[in-house]
Length: 196
Image (cartoon, rainbow, N blue to C red):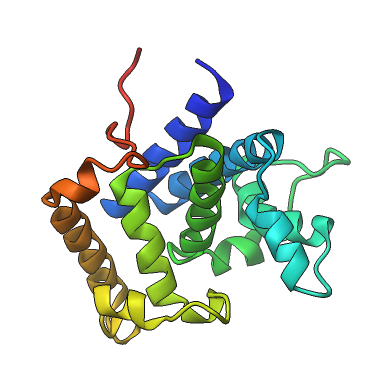
């Protein structure tokens, strides 16, 4: 097992849980852990991780503030004590958490893992299209949001449950597409990798 497999295992399990409406805290912890590893792997491979892209397009953003945003809920979930050994006061942060916070950490984690690995599962590819349909404002100016709206029409007018149903339906359609499934950049392994 190497770090690439570890990132893939964490992100794959996180996305599988997310798609099946599994525990959102576990999704978040796995996605943040896998995403942190994937970011480093992307840098080592000579790629530009999402964090570098974000720092380049958001003027007041710093590396520290970006990490604080990513780690906000993750730290609340994984630490009982602060750096001084005192009990953390995370009540307000925990009250703000919802499954929707997972959209962003999953997107960033899979973005970086795709750069590091050179491929990703069809579920993650569909998730990225779904993400851009959910958040068209995140697209670069030269990207046409209509491409994603065509796959997921009127997504933001739906309930959260229906939005995720649409994502699962898109994945099911993609799995029936031989061209998609046989593409060289498609990771054909299941989201939750078996024990070696």
